View 1: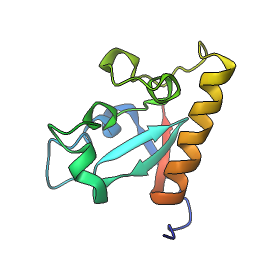
View 2: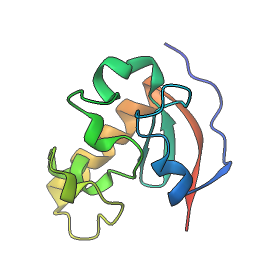
View 3: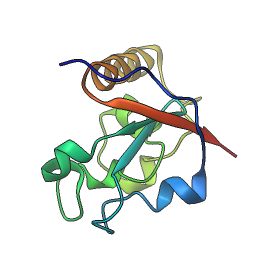
View 4: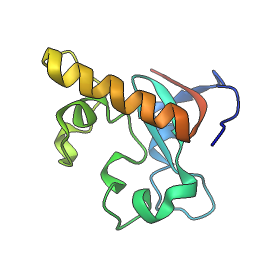
Length: 108
C-alpha cells in the first residue's frame, strides 16, 4: 500500500483536535512525534466510539510508546518513555508511515 509523499503543512493543536472523528465531514487525524497522519480510511478503528478513537485528534506519542489506550496518556510529550517504550513508539511511527498519508506537522 503506497502513501502520498509526506506534507509539512503546519497544523495547530486546536486544529488537530477538530479531527477526532466526531465531525463526519472532517478527516480523522492521529499525530505521532509531531507527524500528522490521516487515518480516515480506518474510521472503523479511529472514529467516534471505536477502539482507537482515544488517539484521534491528538498527538498520541506517549500512549503509543506505552501501548496504552488511556486518554491521560494520549499526549505529545514522550520524554518519560523508557528505551523499550521509545522503541515501541518508533515501531508505531514506522507502521503508520507505511499505511497512512502524513498530511502535516503539529505546531504549537
